[in-house]
Length: 109
Image (cartoon, rainbow, N blue to C red; front, top):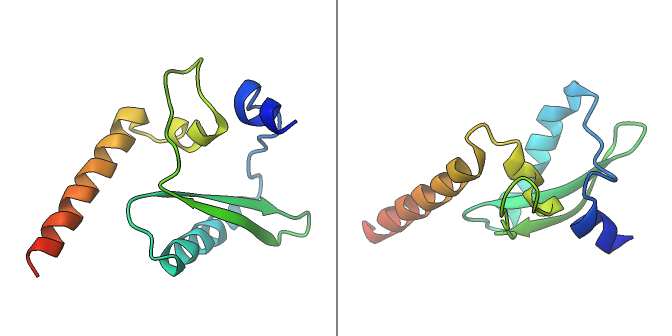
C-alpha cells in the first residue's frame, strides 16, 4: 500500500482539513517543529488530525524531495507545491532567493 499511495495513486488517502479553525494550530505546530530542528530552507511536516481535533505530528522532513516533473507525473511529496499560489516555479524561486539571502546575511557577520 505504501507504494500505491506514495507513487502510483497519491490521491488515495489525501483528506482535506475540514475544520478551518485547526489551520493556525497546524501552522504553529509546524513552525515550532521546524525551529526545534534548526531548519533552514524548507520542510514538509506530516501531521494527522484525530477525530477529537488533536494534532499528531508524525515527522518533519527538512529539505524534502521536490520531484515535480509535471501535473501527471508527481508524488505525494509534491502535494504542498501543487497548492502554492505561485506554482512549482514560484516555490523553487523562493527557495533559491531565501538561500541567497541567508548566505549574504551570514557573510556580513
